[in-house]
Length: 439
Ligand code: GDP
Image 1 (tube, rainbow, N blue to C red):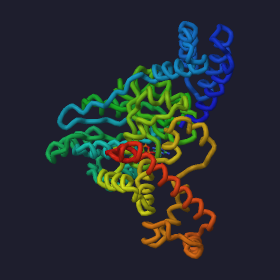
Image 2 (image 1 turned 120 degrees about the horizontal axis):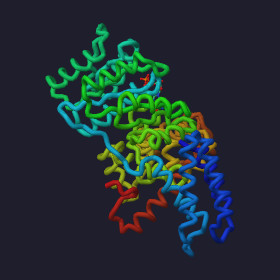
Image 3 (image 1 turned 180 degrees about the horizontal axis):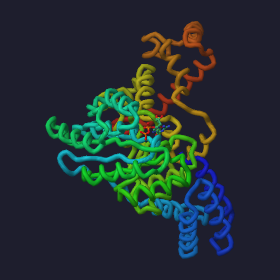
Image 4 (image 1 turned 90 degrees about the horizontal axis):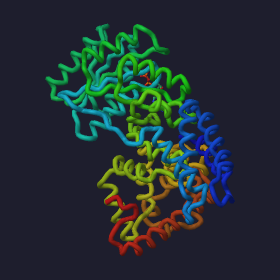
């Protein structure tokens, strides 16, 4: 996510290295580089100019504290200004009304249907009774796609494949929701490849007739500058309440999407970064700015863990860590939980300083495969007592898992180091709390 932008901003700050203070001259060079980095990432030109003008003004106006270098100060100011550009505060969706209706708009392929499923999944986990309404009347496949997602997450889908009137279907869906005790209806609508009159008329009448509690505009972050223009047109027609950025997991420049907030003055409410139903996050401008600047986003990481991890399993693991009994069986269980959280590279990118280091690495869920294969080739005894491992056992496991003895030795060493670290942490915390503090 925003790897290139992070890299180029980092390079921009380096132009201040070794400088004792901020001057008109040195700040001008850095700010020019920052602007170039933003424009290269597809941030709207005018937005990039305004942001960097403010960064310069702030930098020249602030006294550099003795403990902070000009470079560090500029990173801080840039973080604040990027957060402002993206809206500063997190804004939630409204779920007023009974049932409350959430209208999903956007171009075809932007990720509306996938997002509808993710949002339904999220709201369901919060204990809401959700109904998905399939109102894409032009693409029969869209109805099937929503049904598949609905089944996957255990949310009912309302559809009328023969009906060609989106407003009527949506109204029937709302009635169905009322009669069946649902509190939220998510209306997935039809999109076109480009803005056209028929689509705009249809989505406008849906908005007028349904009077939704929330209208969201979904935009594919990979579409570059067009994203801003499309957002403008939809906003003029719909006066939507919030923006959803999708496909942020790709190697996208994504900056255009981030400028939408400033251009249309509507908050970005969610980001979607992957095809898994869990790959949805509330949008926090300040945290995103930190992430772009390579400061990581540990708060989101922990929150995500808390949402995704099975509480019982986490408590069980914490207990074992406290008692120094953490074994390979537990390691495997933890790997499974981490994989549920989303794209591994994105997760690592949330750790401070990691973004830069893993920029060019090709990490995906398959990265864990050899480790999993090794553990699965161990007997239960070996998993719970790694000390048993001798040369012949290692050879057997290597053959069984299609790996080498060297890889097994590496894993055993890492595991040993991990256990040592857990032991130290237990001692430090007076053995009262577990490792990650999740409980
Ligand atoms: P719609 O036409 O607006 O309903 O778009 P879809 O939900 O059908 O999405 C279009 C394509 O983008 C599908 O292949 C999705 O699997 C994919 N997609 C949607 N959201 C994401 C995302 O956040 N990341 C990635 N990588 N792909 C996505």
